[in-house]
Length: 80
Image (cartoon, rainbow, N blue to C red; front, side, top):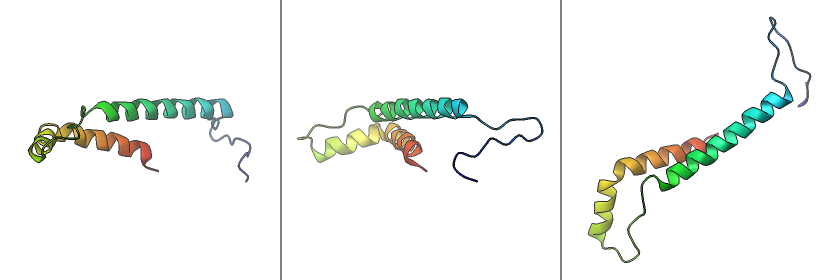
């Protein structure tokens, strides 16, 4: 069987055709983009360049849950 093998019908249910595959692929791409953008802005802006160590620690203590969710959502997009 090659990459473009004919669809196989089993028990009256036909396999996906190219248009269905295209729609699912497009929806997955859009979902990836939306989740990635949402995850990028979820934790809020990080501390500035001149922030003290205490300011950085305070930021991540206050936004730790949002940062964890953002990392999880980004990992969903990169997993294979």
